[in-house]
Length: 75
Image 1: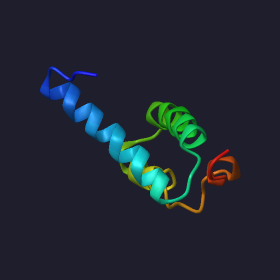
Image 2: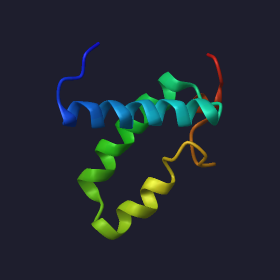
Image 3: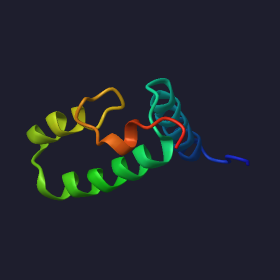
Image 4: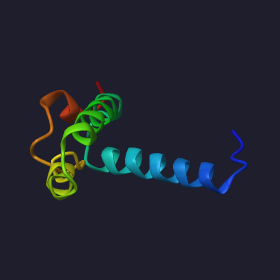
């Protein structure tokens, strides 16, 4: 796959970093990514800027608040 713009390269780097960080935290990559994208859309619609930072903390790969299906490595 070719990345032909700086924006595309940045987006790819963010995605790769996210996936590898989730893998390092022994998360199920598919379920974590699905959960993350779903929750981000909900959060950005209803939260103020001050509330966003706290809410984002709950979505990080090492958060204890993640649902159990995200924690099942390899399934």
